[in-house]
Image 1: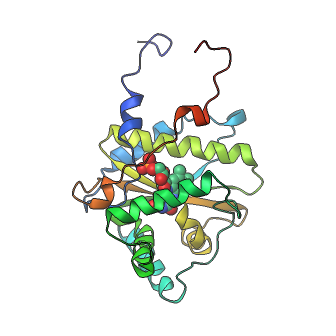
Image 2: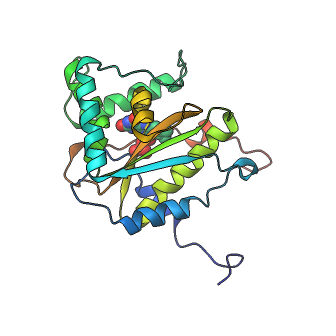
Length: 233
Ligand SMILES: Cc1cc2nc3c(=O)[nH]c(=O)nc-3n(C[C@H](O)[C@H](O)[C@H](O)COP(=O)(O)O)c2cc1C
């Protein structure tokens, strides 16, 4: 059937079942699935069809040795090496700041880590740098000459990858946390200095028993985000 007349089965299901997975099973992801997801995600739109995304996908021994390298570096330098961009605005105003704090509280509550338990929070933060146990990792970068519009294009491909992963029974976690290790990531992957390293992404099978995967994330009501213009009530 032509794409002009066919009806998609369910994007909604992929959207509703995607969540940021922070505990993965030690179960390899079939290479065919990884290739299918990436090949199909390249259909993501981009302004002017620039397709500004650069993606590295890593698994196996190479991934394990990089995770080890970062683990070693974290002992001396728990704050990382510094990111190439502001992960959040330096003065994050409300309502964004409240939302960010709220999601942190909810996440730590799932694993019983109290607000004052700095070590517990650091330990969970450090799980980012193990890709939460995922067997497959992706890294995203774009040319430094790119502007805000092209950063939004990065979101297009990353969300496409995460939704396609759901089709294959896989889960994911996008990870800006990796930005604090930009120099090491760039060295590991040979990413040229003409590019900005954006984020990582963990991909694998969700651990169904992990408390952290029970986290339910709220969304603000539609009235806070969407203004309907020219609609009746
Ligand atoms: C670009 C991007 C980067 C993110 N970076 C991280 C990260 O480094 N570590 C993490 O645990 N979650 C990260 N998240 C996940 C968000 O916290 C999550 O999307 C948000 O709380 C909503 O939850 P949900 O994805 O489960 O719906 C990131 C999400 C996005 C879109």
